[in-house]
Length: 89
Image (cartoon, rainbow, N blue to C red; front, top):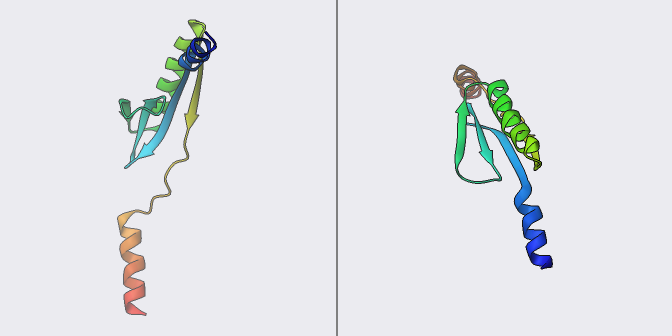
């Protein structure tokens, strides 16, 4: 019976993840490979994750949103300039 109770507690926990992937923001659920959505802005992706978490909380379930940091990206012209400066020196 204790195993059933702990399984039920784990099942009620919902985690929504907002991650930057290749220039877009992915929203996933409970570290599943299934993608809920992909958005061009972090704000849009976080809003969806918050909406889904709020829906779970209204149903009496636990839900959390986890947002990862944006990738530090260098524009291609910046990479090319740095490579050219190294080649010239």
